[in-house]
Image (cartoon, rainbow, N blue to C red; front, top):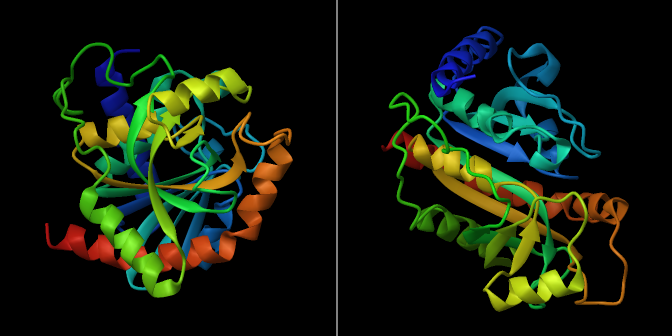
Length: 282
């Protein structure tokens, strides 16, 4: 499959999704492990299984519902992914970022990406929400590798502000208004699916990582290539290996996601209208 195929397939999928609802979203939200409940907050919602969207990959990870929801958060039209696909599921990087390509063809100009992450920086304990300020890509893959297609954007893109400084400030200030502490930190993306070893966590801490996870970074790269502004928020669902004596398991990740879902939903309800307003103002 060529790069131009990605563009053609994204256009086809975008038209299919848009035919299911009159809503024309300008903001996309990706909900990570255990955080999918936010989509239940939407009004005028239309739900589409990934299985029913042309060229969409099917999510196989526990805690990822695998459906797209079009609707409104307050007065803001949004498209929400309840779950994503990951490189560790065996999908190529093109499949992982394909939804971002589709959203761009739908007219989306801003993306809010969420994930469950391991805490490396001990200041960000279990249950903390952290706005990602930068990332370290250790997944060994980049969605821009291959033939350049101007329909998708430039090959050599500036990543000095991959995560919008303005959007981070919106999230942190919104957290203050709500009494929800929101930190800032650097996210290290690993391939997974095994959790990191204590030695790997010591390495990640040494090179400046505050958080570690297995998603988000490919989507951010693709979103930035297409000119989308990005806010990414991690929920620290577990402390990384070696920071405590406790073993790590995926059930705990999902459970902590559920426990802080109230704070998470409140923060998103506050932030989405601000980002939608920024998009409207161009």
